[in-house]
Image (cartoon, rainbow, N blue to C red):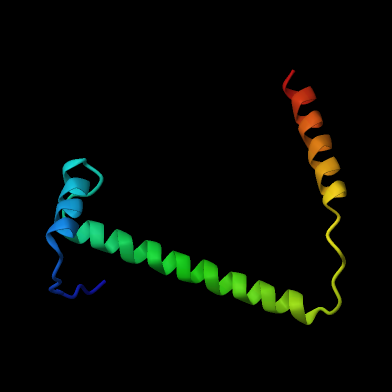
Amino acid sequence: MAMRRKTITLTERQDSWVKGQIQSGHFGNDGEYIRHLIRRDQQAQERLTMLRKALAEGESRGKTRPLDVSAIRASGRKRMKAGNECSS
C-alpha cells in the first residue's frame, strides 16, 4: 500500500493528548494514532450508511405495527430466566 506524507497542525492541547496516547503504550507514534482515528471514522461512516440503508428499506416496506413494549419485556424476562436456569 502506497503511503502519503501529510503535514498537520495541532493545538498544544491536542499535541499533549496524542503524546499521552503514545506514552501510555496505546500507539507507537503520531502516525499510528492518526491512522487509528481515520479508521474509526471510516467504520463509523460505514455503520451510518448501513443504518440509513436499513431505515430506508424499512420505510419502503409499508405500514408499520405499533411497538408492544409489554411483549418485549416479557420476552426479555423469559430469556433471562432461561439463561439463569442454564447456568445453574
